[in-house]
Length: 317
Ligand code: BTN
Image (cartoon, rainbow, N blue to C red; front, side, top):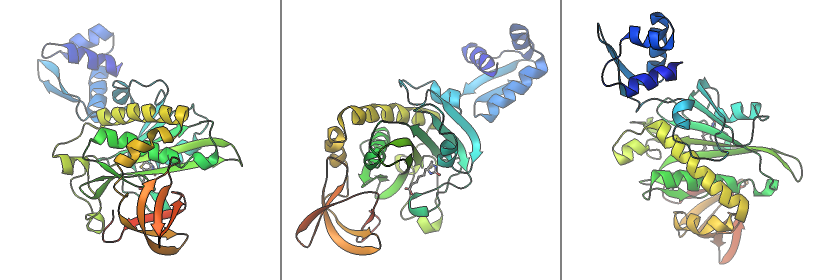
């Protein structure tokens, strides 16, 4: 019903009175008022003037499942969107609901216990985009970590050409992290039960806590304008499906060229932490299965994203 009201207001030429809306929809004026307040809570700007009624002004800050769906053009990703104001972690929420269909998306405005990689926490207030995609592909558990790289390509393509990827999956703007991805799975020896790919994008944050201000940034800080979160998330989901389908049909090798072109780790001297052993190596490439190719003391080898962490020797990237 509230979207019927929204539709009427959007298509109206100016103000619509509460009485007119209530008669058209056969509901009380009090219900009209309540539903308009709900729409306002979701971020729609609707002004009201005594004796004239209500007027639609803007949907820029509207963030809801309906608003995300409006701009989707996917076949199966986000056909089901679960949306909430606050949850501990969208990854945990998606795992608890792993019986939902393939491609279901779990979005939260805020996370109270957002999870980062390696047990870190992930600050998640209402200025960012926090969501998890539930996936049920017919792939081997060993290939699951590549989905994080696929997701990274999708987010990078939406942020634009100034964004790069720090292997395996941090998205970087101006040498700082703007997006992190945490992929978790449930599997047997050779079968994947489900995967949860959780993506956190700093979009409208204007300042970060001092401890991370030299390594974290947001799209707004870098691009100088506020982001419409629903439109941005729809674009990421559209892009995610595009890259994910290529991966499912042709493997990561079909995406490795684009990945390498946008990966800032390649060509850098990096500090590798492999199960507690720290060493310096040169990153020389990314393999067709998403491993980082490094050279250590003249020996070339591949490291797997699930097993190592990589940092620049002078700074975070
Ligand atoms: C990282 O450490 O770089 C990964 C951060 C992943 C954060 C996202 S936000 C949505 C999803 N829910 C979580 O709890 N974590 C991921």
